Image (cartoon, rainbow, N blue to C red; front, side, top):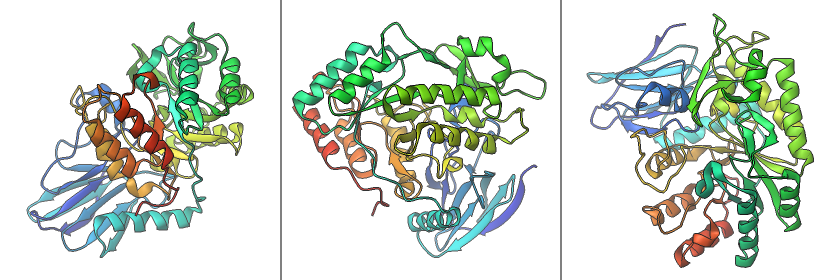
Amino acid sequence: MGFEDVAQIPVDPARGQIYEHGWQSRSPTTSYPVNLTSARPVNDRRRRMRYRPETPAPSTGFQGEGLLVVDNGDRVQVISAADPTSAVPSIRAGLTGRSVTVSADGPVDVLTVGEPLGPALATWADGLVDRLGTAVPRPAPTVWSSWHHYSTKVREADIDENLVALARLELPVDVVQIDDGWQTEVGDWLGLSSRFTSLEAVADRIRGAGRDAGIWLAPFLAGSRSALAAGHPDWLIRTPDGSPVPAGRNWNQDLFGLDVTRPAVREHLRAVFGRLRHLGFSYFKIDVLYAGALPGVRHTGHGPIAAYRQGLELIRDTIGPDSYLVGCGAPILPSIGLVDAMRVSADTAPTYEPGDGDLGGPSQRGATISIVGRAWQHGRFWVNDSDCLIAHPAVERRTEWADVVTRYGGLRASSDRLADLDDWGLAATRRLLSDVPPPKPFA
């Protein structure tokens, strides 16, 4: 359906605020003066990978995905999906004179409260959790991740080096997580890159050191170079004319989403996660999850959100209740109740500003905006993952980034090469890993 008006809200243009909730982890989420326009992707490629691809925002104004709040200076109105685990309408708002017109492309609820913006979001979230019967989040482990130093070039020897350093420095880390770069190709999760000889052996060494083994993968994604995409083109989500739906471009290749309603794809996912669990991994960071919720034609005819949740449920069932599951690059509201922790922002970076100017891309500023903007989700939907602490000397404004993680980071992770930390960086890392907040809403 098209957009239809759902509310006309008088507003003081000098005091009014709009809170815009983005589609997925990396979509900017924050509040703005009502007379401005919210963040926009710098190009179509960024839109596909960081925003809601099927519904571009208008050139001016605001567009929340399943949630938008208007604070007119005297009262707050929360406009939201009734059940965002089944349908997430896009909600637009635009200022005309002294009123805001709110429209949506699907049914929404309108809740009027007398509380300020922050408490109003908390009230809405508490009500949603009660209606859905979502379980109380469980405590998060502390983590060392290979990503921010080694990127996709991580080697087995790098994991071993930092495993030794963790013991030498006596850092309180529960999980050592291997990030992107261990796999043969994006989508080929049953094979190893040339930099690894045995995942089982690495997991054994991690567990032998008294820590849990963690691993990264993007289970709903297939790169155009992958054997999966070449061998099983029918596994990809399709447009009505039969071509694969693009999920963006990264790793120097085109990307596509998997149709998780296909029995063969479901068996593939069971095989991947069953094998990793068998090899000794019990912490799973699953990324680029928006690929499973792309619009398109699926085997069963299920809509994108229902299919996406089916895929997450299958993963959750396969890894078992004792494994810890972290979502990333994920449609936020459709994921409620299915992950233990959720990345609530763009990636951080050694630089404060995003290199391409897009606030959905890696940067401390872009990450901080959404970390603060989604702080109310911690302890209600899940544990908030603010991305890792990076504290080596080359990190710009590193004291400010450490302060953000200290205040808003529920899942505490280090992602430096530990040998590169100076005295300040090591002290900051030790402090943050030693003082993990409980999985309760932030005060």
